[in-house]
Image (cartoon, rainbow, N blue to C red; front, side):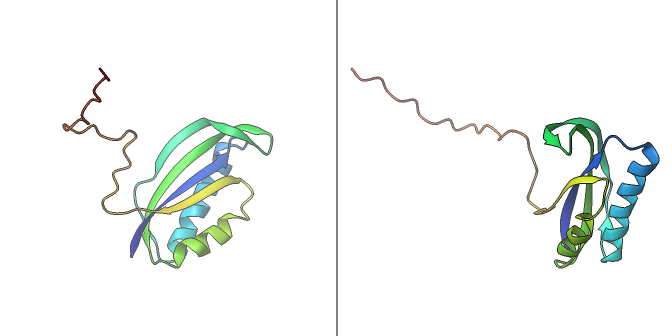
Amino acid sequence: MKTYELALVVNAKIDDEARAAAVDQAKALIERFGGQIGEIEEWGKRKLAYEIQKMNEAYYYFIPFDAETSAPAEIEKRLRIQENVLRYLIVAKDENDTFSVAPEKTAEAAPAEEAPE
């Protein structure tokens, strides 16, 4: 089994029940294809980088899961037709990935260039 993360962008113009149903459908798809779901991270309502279907905001969810290598393709096939899911992305996570925002600075700095004399 390999570790993956599903990034799910859900329509912000629907009610809370419909939004929860869209997330539950995604979780059900993962479990249907033998995946084991980790702790879901909800980022809430965020502004989109660009307009999607005349919408400027959406709800973001990140769902980590373990599954066989054939599962992501099957999950994506079924997410594609869900009405309230605006965008989705499944990425494979490596055990060494830390997903840091900025690269860490090392103690060894590059030598400063000398000014021409």
